[in-house]
Image (cartoon, rainbow, N blue to C red):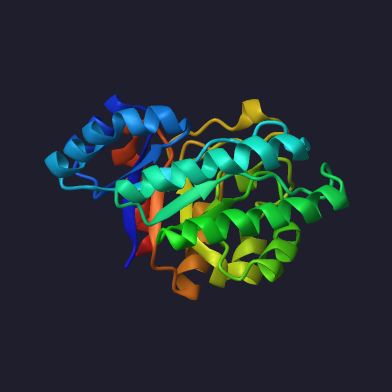
Length: 246
């Protein structure tokens, strides 16, 4: 069954998502010490609104700095997995750029080993770890999927519209559907840079959501969908999703 929830970057946005009645909030878990300090409050809010949480873990920083990734980022992620588990989180999204056009092959090979380490650490705590697409086409994910059997992905349909002529969601759905465990939805007008990642409500950009959802429906997608838009735009976006799901 498809479950639609909202992205919440802050404590106040968690309150907003909860008050709007969505079944889950995808929350930012970025700094272990802050997450630990917020733990009691997050648990109270979870009970108050009767919601569950998904995790959105931090960006990796310099994607080519392997020493930083090995020595600082991966240990930080493992601490955050423990915080996520204490919140009852069973699914989390992370960024780990493996675009072959921008990252050297040897670095990608090592990054895949780090992905394996993180997936195994999360799995021991009952958390499914989902790699989010940034600029990568589907074939850039295939070596990681081959090496790490338990790795899943978050298909960010908005990101898939950027730095490409055709939305790359089609390739991921055609070739990696069994690895797609989560969706991020938001709209934009295409473009070639981070500033073009506008996170508009569905229908306010050019992303071909009708065709993408038609393909997802055909393949039988039945998992979580996070609206990565501001809470006031979630009602419009949810209406669009439900229309496409029909």
